[in-house]
Length: 483
Image (cartoon, rainbow, N blue to C red):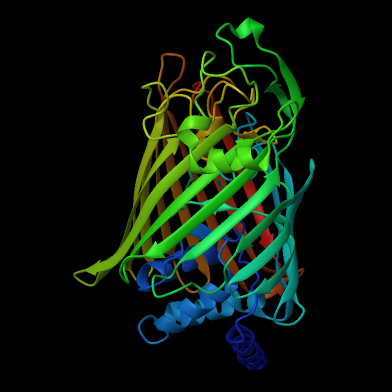
């Protein structure tokens, strides 16, 4: 009874906070799987949501949640309880510990550079709201290699312009298992982000833009991009990364998004505001520049990635579904000099096969030289990992081959306390140097009737398969959650 009263009080406080239309804290990203899966179900069955980038603002999810109170009461009550800590004035949102053993030191998909050899992990977060227009959050990961901030920021502003300063992650894609442009495959870096809490106009326009300085690259081109690689001069440095994502609604069911990334400057390369503006509005003339096009070594801005995506949600014979796709491009559609350097992805999500099951399928196909660039020897990498699709790390460091990747997610709510998530991934790199990679990830979680040593649930996860070199890998992990 006391637990129910506490929840009702929390809901009342949260409703008051959300109604004021100020700034909003964020929900976790690739850290609390059951909560995040339920949010994906919520967005798929709700019309007029139009959320195409992550992490999601608690304000958005709270508003969408109110729309399914009578159509999906079980999901409504579950998510109300799960999201309540994130929209309170101040709360410890989640605490989780993981101990594991693994082999082969393979990258874990979308886990910020952690590998099968990462043995001890502590994750947690806390939010603090100081009025309608200011707040702070401390969210991160501690492992044996150090601390990885995920959503450790201060935020301020109002409903049409929220400013985030700190370690704020960005996921620019409607896809859930991967993102071609920007994901959590690599660790984030400090950034300044501006976005809106409330959508603008009847078209539900949303925007998110940021500027960040990446980690040091081993070499950034100093002189002109001459034909002979031996004549090119490089110096180490830290490039900048600018991101812009915007989306708008076409109908209640259809959303379209546009995303841009610009990696520029760093080390020996100087960039003026005029250079940046020209690169932004005319990427074809400021990128893909040949050695005979100009004598100015700094004329070429850097590297650019862009994407156009759509997401469509509806029902067919009372079966809800979400269909989405994305076309991503490097510099300009079709590439420079007549070449092609594009990526194509599509996905399908069925949130309720029945009450307890959901399934998601995603496929991506990209051409050679994705995440590579002649100016930056490490390409589009941060902390040594690509900033986009998890499969971008599954090849030799400088061999940016074309590839095809698939993922299949199956979520099964066994009962009110037990939850099972199974993910299958496959990857085929072009060329005879690689083998077809396949992997399976099975995670089981059980909520305890009574807390044990402070833990409210426990879980076990098996991650196993063969990589692109034909080598087997595995990881067995045990998890305890304290929230």
